[in-house]
Image 1 (spheres, helix red, strand yellow):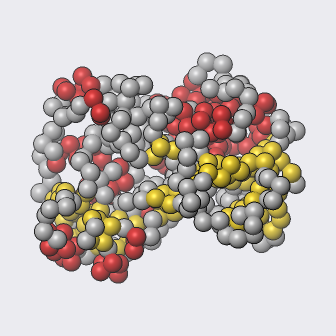
Image 2 (cartoon, helix red, strand yellow):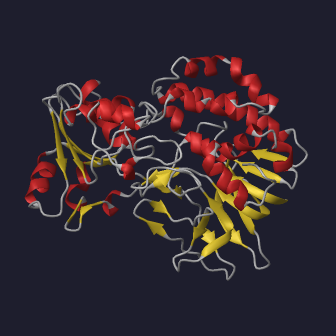
Image 3 (cartoon, helix red, strand yellow):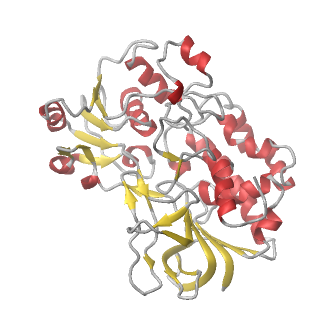
Amino acid sequence: MIHDLIVCGGGPAGTGLFVHAMRHNALDAFLAPGVLLVERSAQLGAGSLAHYRIEANSLGGAFLEALDDDGVDPRLAALRDHSSVAAVRALAGTTPPLPVVGEYLRELGTVVGEAIASHPGGDVRLGTRVDAIRLLPAGGAEVRMVDEATGAADTATARTVVVATGGQPRPLDRIKLRDDLNLWHYLDKSVHSSALIDRRAELAALGPNPRVVVVGGAHSAWSVAHLLLEEELLGERPHVTVLHRSPLRLFYTSTAMAAAEGYPFDTEDVCPLSGRVNRYSGLRGRAKDLAARTMGLAGTRPSTLDVLPITPDAPRRTYTDVLAAADLVVAATGFDGAVPPVTGRDGESLRLLTTADGHAVDADGHLVDESGRSVPELVAFGLGCGLRVSSAVGGEPRFRGRADGVWLYQHDVASVITSTLRRPAIV
């Protein structure tokens, strides 16, 4: 099969590209050259997100903006009255539980899948994983697909392949707390945060009064701390220590709100596009509430919670003593991209560049090889492959991470990727 574009992955990122086109009522133009969407599971839209037992790091209303815009595809507009949308809308001003968001994204995925499949230029393959990509000598790429139920394999080719296959937990043996400290000596009692956050994971309870160290300072780390302390996920009366390298950052919708709560910030923390404080790096919802208590901004810190910044000048034993005494170490340090193996035009394995926070992509979303060259046939975005913050996607100047999130996948990030794919002007 020959297509102009193959999109690997139908979770929030992969479907977000099509939602972006539908927001502008331009899906027909997007699909006309020939597009194949391949998804490993039997359902488009939510990916693993629907299985997470934590809150979103966005307000509920943000998830519905794609439906509420003027002039959207009528098939999107028809979702406004769906019960899953009503459930999210009821939480528009709060950070909703991700399973609630997941139900809505599944319905959205169904609409997107039906819209693609009904178009002459569109095709959808569910229950199919992409297990290899091969760059072709004459240009373009071949994707090898395997049916999850039967094991049957076939291939499809395209001018461009988008990799939006989600993330995979960063290997624990690669995690460095600082130059002289990693988790090597604690691997036998360490897990990735997904082992607690994902309901499908089976992690045995630790018994009463467990001592748990959480490594990380972003949303997943503080969400894990909340699960342990407030919901006693792994045992009664736990003691939790959060080890973090970066300063704790809280989200505020305006500088006035941040100032009113006594939160310290400067212009480097303010997104120039939205005026929001710590738009990308800031904690929200329960994670924010817990962190704010440790900072003395709201309420009192739980007596069984310690927060220990990782600094280069502190004695190494400051951290090794805490790690050694822990019953469990939870690494909330992010994801790498789950990118299928890639073969170059020369028939040799193409080694893609990875960084401390996932696979490297250039400003246009192209994957980058280890020599620093962009691969024009391969575009990637989503968890573990996110675009860096730029003027095109906004964000606070101080933030050096990736631009990730459902809203971004349907709006600013999708706009960048659509431009890279040389599709009709959809902004």
